[in-house]
Image: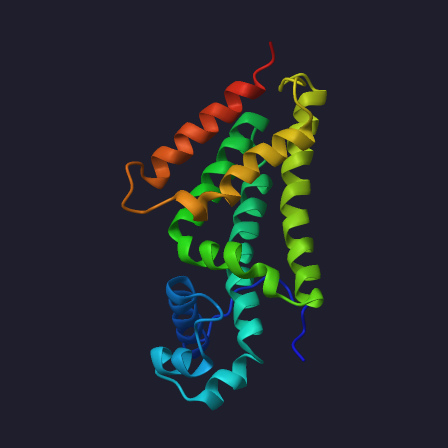
Length: 201
């Protein structure tokens, strides 16, 4: 049984990364149900024994796809917050990092958005805790700035958080790397929109 409370640090061994990369590619192309363990093994050029040495099951692989993505995003969040910049700069940096990270790893985000309901309750508990920490941190920054009069209170901190982060959560359904807007352009537009809405009137 894996330790599902482990710290949010991505898998780093070359074999684990190969297995995860193969699973991401196949799950994105064929879906979770449409991909067999044997197909992952063949795509990763490893033995089935090697896969089961690192991962208990396909469910474990699915969780690790999310775990790797959220670990990266939480690390970005912590780094931005630790910089101690003013609220507007902090919100701009958080959203920019999140949008660019999601765009750069869109297959991982796509797999997770489509297949996360397949995770068992233990994995879902860890997932919700990760997301809650991200949302709570973002909401706290908005709420503190509203209290100081830096941000408008026209929308509650909860609503601002749901709208801003919810948009990013929807990116897997519409963002394409070869689309009309780059991730950087999208981040500029989204942050400008959110910050304009937060301007005190």
